[in-house]
Length: 343
Image (cartoon, rainbow, N blue to C red; front, top):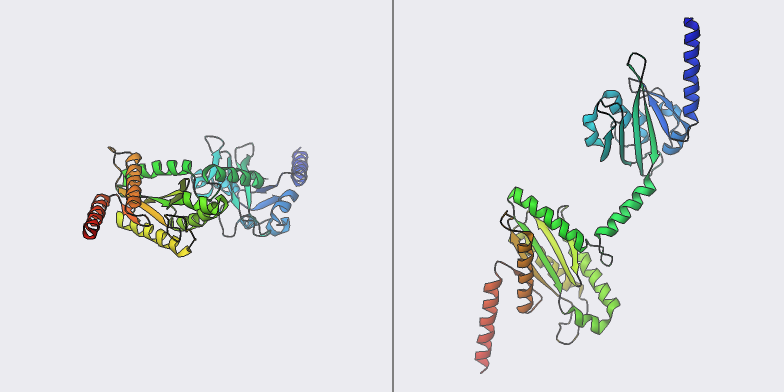
C-alpha cells in the first residue's frame, strides 16, 4: 500500500513538473530553503537564463536584478510581507495570513540587457499537515502596457511645445508644496518669468520663430530646476514659472538672475520696434513661509505683482515682491529727477 502511494505521489509530481515546463506563462518554483526546483521554458525565454544555471541554487535573483535582493517568491517562503513596500512600488497581499503576494516592478534582466516591467504572483504550496513544500512564482511581461501608461501620464502633465510641466501639473505641485511648507515651516519661493515684448517678436519673425524662441527659453528655465523637488512649468503663453521649495528670497533671486543672464547670452535677435536688440526676460520673485492663514493664491499674487513691477521698471530685470515698492518708488523718483534736469 505504501509503495503504491509513493509511486502515485511520484507520478503526480512528475506530471506536475512536465505540466509546468510546457506552460506558456513564465514560472519557477523554489523549495522551503529557497532553492530552485523548477524553471520552465517560458521562464528561460523571458529571462535568457537556462534552467541548468539556476536549478538547485538560490541564485534566481540574477535573472532579474544586477545586485542581490529578494524575489517575490522569497518573501512568501520567508513570510516577510513587511519587505514588500521596500522592494516593490506596487504590491498586494492576497490574504490576511500572507498566503500569497502580487507585485509589479521594473527588472533589469542582466542576461538579455533590457528592462522589463513585470507583473508577478507568488503563492505557497503546503502538504496535508500545513507544512510549506514549495513556492510558485509566475511572471507576466507588462512592459508595453507600462510604457504606454507612462506616455499618457507624461502627456497629461507636460506642455506639448516646451516639454516643461503644464499648468495643471503646476497647480497641483504648488498646492502640495504649500501644504508641505506648512508642516516644515520653511520658505517656499515662486518665480514668474515673462518674455519681454513677445507679441512684437511674433509679429516681426513669425509664430514658428516664436515657438523656437519659447523652446530655447524653456530649456534654460528647466535647467535651473536642479533639485527633484523643484518644478519648472509653462504657465501660459510666453510666461513660465518655477516652484522652489525650501528656498529663501536671496536664493530665489539668484536662480532668477541666472535665468535672465542665460537668455541674454543666447542673443536671440529681436529688433522689433520699441524692443531691445535681443530677447530678454522680466522675472518676478515671491517668497513666503506657508501658514494656515494664507493660501497659495497669496504667493501667486505677489509673484505676479513683482513681475508687473519688473515690467514697469523697464523690463530685462529681476524684481522681488519684498522690494518692489521701494524699487518702483526709486525708479519714479529717478525719472522725475531726469525730467527736471532736462528742463
